Image (cartoon, helix red, strand yellow):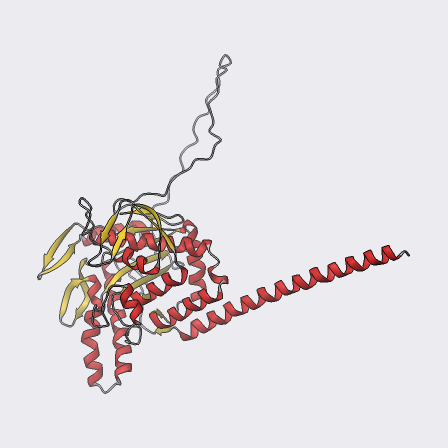
Length: 424
């Protein structure tokens, strides 16, 4: 055998070895990455705040007439608190106060300024997110500190304020009394929502503080949003945005979701319902960001999200985070729509601004969203016979069409996930 042939065979063997080594290294890196993700998720499951509270089983009132409640569904209540402390009652870092335009822990209370009921039907069909305007005036599920009616967002804070001094008088430590009072507050808020929506079942809850929102936005920034018109509110929320598609930093994202008034531009009138719509739009944009970016392969980002969850988020005992993550991935592709419950008018009760609502109308709306009627298939269109003398043909547009983002100009339009929406 010639030296040239021997040398060529040796080169081929060396190349195969090199390819094998590279492939092996890639596999090791991928396995190491998966191991890190799994270990972090296990750590998250053991380190996050879990609350062992009773969840409303529901009365079945939301089922359509003659249709039984489907026990294969999953219903999650997301509660966003306006408190300026973490899950242990400790103040935030100063950079978070700066970002949310709040001086310190004394500003804000324990209102649930975000209330989102997520219904995932059995079989994995399209989900629906129902936003409950925070100032809806409702009847509570029982008296809370001697009060039977109030804004739906206030059930949490009222119960916490009523329960904490009682627990402290019983001799509990301040830390234990605080945690038990927050559990009681969660139960009160969840019962209020279940009753208001017509006795709906709530299987799980996710409690999110303002700090959690900011840290998540900080980990994945910039986040793309779209506005129908320019708007600004430097005094209250710090908002200052041009019209159209734009990318936001974490601090700007806080202003985006908190703005409910315009103090600069004439003819721009925003309300709390616009803020609710902004929150929905941000969740859609965040889902798109997480879907398109390699978020869960970036270990630094993943660790930030996990640390945020441990400090600023609370869940019920039974919520499986892996299943929730799978659902969220499905939603990012357009598997969920968002709807805001109707408000009849704005009013004043007891000197406070409230939303006046029609409870029967609310419950009928919820029933229709959770159990929509099965669509009747349309009959096939008759086939027209072509004239033997006709030589004309119907033109077919084979060029792709370019469409801008969907524009939502009022809170009653259902918002579909999957693409960046334009909002007021």
